[in-house]
Length: 191
Image (cartoon, rainbow, N blue to C red; front, side, top):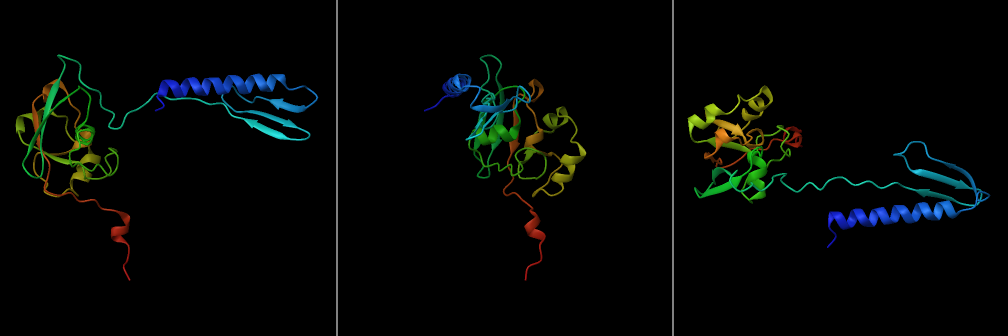
């Protein structure tokens, strides 16, 4: 299985080999050889053939869910109550949002928009008003999406917008019995 480190080494070797082969080409074979910017591909044209050498770059690995395991002693706890009433107590890190936490632990929270506050499928109900009051006020975008949520309550929030902090340690949220995911196709005329 290729790890990110192995992949980066392989790409570096390919880049080095390609550049060595290019420098071994004679000047008479290459009519034009230019590098526009350091990040752009190296383009070489000859009278008989053209070849294109691309620069490779890598980005840091970003795991699904974007959550990090909590460090010992820095755990925060959140409890999800699923549609069947079963409780799931999970140790999380500061800065993780409820949507990512739920998805990383295979709980039934859809998050159709990927956490961009453009749907209501990550709707949760905060069970304790004291915890609800410790959260920042929902912004207009979140309130607009909550208006579309199934089973809306006074303590409803979108899971993608609830970020865990020390003040929220011990938070309990309930997942609604169903979600509503409106799409443009829901409003098209049916013939």
